[in-house]
Amino acid sequence: MTRRPRRPGLTLVEVTISTAILALLGMILARIYVASQAAYSTGTGRVALQQKARQAMQRLTPRLIQAVPASDTQDAIYTPDDLPPMTSQVVYTIPSEPFDPRSPTYREKWIRFEQSTGLITTNADTPGEADLVLARGIHWLGLEVLSPNSVKITVVVQAPLRDVGGNTRDQEYRVQTTVMIPYYATR
Figure (spheres, rainbow, N blue to C red):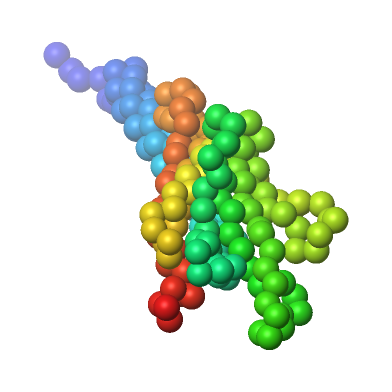
């Protein structure tokens, strides 16, 4: 028996096995790509939420630090009793401009959050002007007066997030701080 000389090329079995291996590698790479896209989306979404919450906090804190009591019997900051549901608000007093120490006058300012609009607003610096919007797209703002010289602020923001399976869920970020009103440190 004589052997036939082998022709150059690949057999059908070799081509089938190499195609299967390439398909398997392609599927693995596709899964890695989808997972990395989901991780990137989650990370950038989280950073955007953190920035929004921190920006709101940076706009609230300096306003509350200005609070001073208008008299010895009045607190510099308080929470009104008659708030509608899903609303948080604090009222504080600041010196009127221009300030005259011989006959000081004060005016009330407020910071209000209504969950139905997602807006944090404050009354204008000049009477008669429209309210100022401090932040938009906020899920919840908690304003809790802890003592005459401190306020606990909680800012919660949410955004939809799509996971690897294509499902959408809400991603939440919460930042909380306590603001100390410096005026009371000198009392």
